[in-house]
Image 1: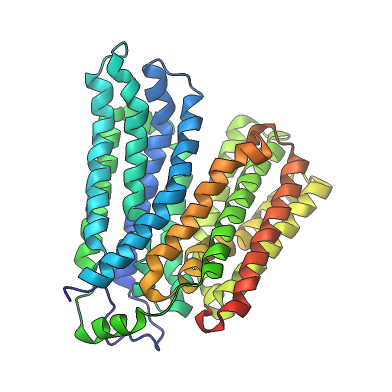
Image 2: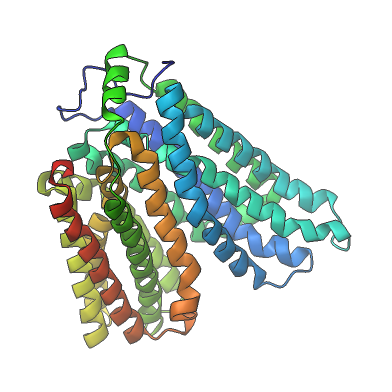
Length: 412
C-alpha cells in the first residue's frame, strides 16, 4: 500500500492522543472553506443582479446547492473512504477538489468581467456558480474525516474545537467586514479566497503524518467492520434537527434585539454573540472530553431547548435577554462543537468520510426543506421560532440518545 493517511504507530487506537500540528492544519483549511463561503454569499446577489437576474435568485441558488449537497457530500465522503482503502490516502481527492474549487472561484469574477450582461452567455452564470458549490463538496467531507486520524475518539471534541474556533471567528467577521470586502472588488477578493484555500491544503499536506506499515495492517484488519445503517440514519437526523434549531435560534435573537436596539446595536451584539460562540468551543471541547461527547451534546441540546422555551414564555428584554444569550452560548457550543466528533464516533474508522458526509447531507436536507416545511424564516414570529426551535433541538437529542445504546464501544 502507498503512503497511508493513518496516524503513526506510537498513537495506536487504544491510546488517547491528539496530533496538534495536523489538527491546526485542518483548522486552517476549515477557516479557508468558511472564508470562501463568506465571500461567495456576499457577492452572489451583486453578481446575479449585475447580469439582470432577480435578486431572489440568490436564495434559490443556495437552496439548490444545498439540495445537491445532500447527495454529493456522502458520495464524496464514501469515495474518499474507498480511495484510502485501495490507494492508502484521501489526499488525491482532497487536492482535486481544492484545485477545482480554487480555479472556479477565480473564474467567477473573470466571467463577470469578460461576459457582457446583455450576452446570451449570461445565462451560464447560475450554472457556473452551482458548479463551484459542487466542487466544494468534493473535498469537505474527505478533509474533515482526517480528524478521525488526528485524534483518538475520546479526544475528538477537544481536537474539533480548533476547527469550530477557526470557522466561527471567520464567519463572525463576515457581516462586519462586508463593506471592506466589497470595496476590494470581486477579482481581488475571489483571488484572495482562492489562494488562501490552496495554501491551507498545502500546509495540511505538509503536516500529514508519514506512512507506517503497522498502521496499514491495522487499517486492513479493521476494514471489514460493517457500517450500521441505523447509525447513519441517526447521524443524518441529527444534522437535520441541529441545522433547523440553529436557524430558528439565529433568527430569534435579532428579532428580540430589534425591539430595544437600533440596527447598529443589533449588528454589534450579534457579532459579539458569534465571537463568544466560537471562543466557547475550546472549553466546550474540554468539557465534552471529560463528560463524553454524546453526554455533552445531550446536555447542550437540553439546555438550548430549555433556554428557547423560556424565551418563548417570557420574551425577556435588556439585561435578562443578554444573560439568556450568554447561557445559550454555553449550551449551544456543546452541540456545535460536538457534531463532527459525534458523526465520526458512530462509524468505523475506515468509513469516516461517509459518516461526515452523511452529517453534512442532513444539513443540506434541512436547508432545502426549511422553506417548504416552515415557510420564510423572516416571517416567523419570535414565539413561534422559539417553540419550533425547542421541538427540533429535542428531536436532535433523541437521535443522539438512541446511539448510546446502539454502539457503546464507540463512546466519545
